[in-house]
Amino acid sequence: MSAKLDRRHFIAAGTTALAVPFVSRGASAQGSSQGTWPARQIRMICSYPAGGQTDLLARAYGESISKQVGKTVVVENKPGASGAIGTAEVARAEPDGHTILCSISTTYIMNRVVMKNPGYDMDKDLTLVSVIPGAGLLLVANPKTGVKTLEDFVAFARKSGKVNFGTYSAGSAPHMTINELNKQYGLNIEPIHYRGEAPMWTGMLEGTLDAAMGSYTAAQSVLQSDRGTVFAVHSKKVDAIPNVKTLPEQGATSKFFTVSGFTGWAVPKATPQPVVDRLAELCVAANGDPKVKEVLATFVLEPAIGFKETNALYQRELPIWIESAKSLGLEPA
Image (cartoon, rainbow, N blue to C red; front, side):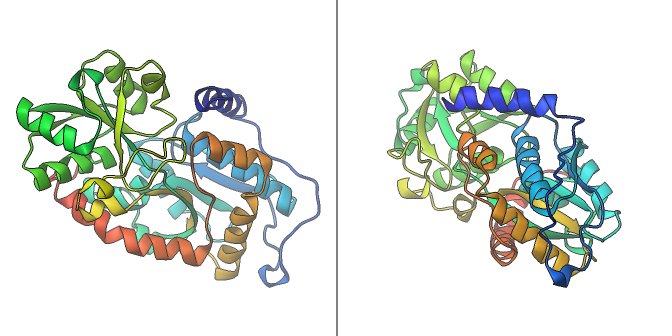
C-alpha cells in the first residue's frame, strides 16, 4: 500500500475514533516502584486536530499503552495556537501521570519565541517523557525551474532574483530553512506562508510556487503527479528516496540543518520520576505494536526513544532552534 493510501486510511480511522477511548481488560503491567499508577483512566491530550500526523500517533501509542497497563486511554484533541491551548491544560493538570500531552517540537520549543504568553513555561511546567525524532523534510522545486540539486536551486535563485518558496506557517522549519539559505548564499528567497501543509502543496500543484518544503507523506500529491522534483532533504535522509542528499551533504553549513524536530509526550513537571520512567518505557515498548509500526511507516518516522535519550536530544537541539528562530526577527504575538 502506498504512503498516500496509508495516510488516507489512517486519517479515516482517526476521525472515526474521535470519541472512542482505548480500553484493555488485560492485566496491569505496572512495576512495583510506581505503586498504583495508573489508578484510573489516562487522558492523552493531543494539541493538534484530529486526523493529522500528531493525532494518529497519539491514538496508535495510546491504544498500545492501554493494552500494556490494562487501563483506558482516552485521546482528546485540544488544538489551537500552535498547540498552546492543549499544552497549557496539561501544564495545569494534577501531576500524577493520568494526564499526558502529545505534541510536537513547535509547541515544546518554538512557542517560547513566537508567542508573548503561550500559557505555559516548558522548562518550569512540563517534563518531556519520550519523543519520536522527526523525519527528513523534503525541499521540492517546480519542474519548470529545472532544479535537481541544491547547487541548481542556488543558481536559479540568483538568476531569478526572487524565488517564491512555500512554508506551512511563519516560524516553521521551512521558514527557518529559507532564512538560513538566504544568509549563506546571499539569496532573496521569499517565504509564502500557508495555514498547513495541504494548502501549501496545493500551491505547488497549481504552479504558483517555485519551491516548497514539507513531509514526504504530505508531498505525495505533488510528487506522484510530477508537479515537483525533490532536490534536497533538510537534515536526514529519507529511506524512500535514498539518492536525494541532505542539505549538509550538498554544502549547506547552518547548524539548523542538523536538527530534526520531534513528536512526543510530556507530563506536568511535578509528576513523580518513577511514573515518568514507566511511561517512557511504555512508549518505547509500543514501538513493537503492529498498528504503531504501520503508522510510523506511513509517515516515514523512527520509533519513540527513552527518557534519557529524549532529554539529551531536547537539550542538544533546543539552543539551535532558538537561535535560528530568533534570527527570523518575528515579533512575538
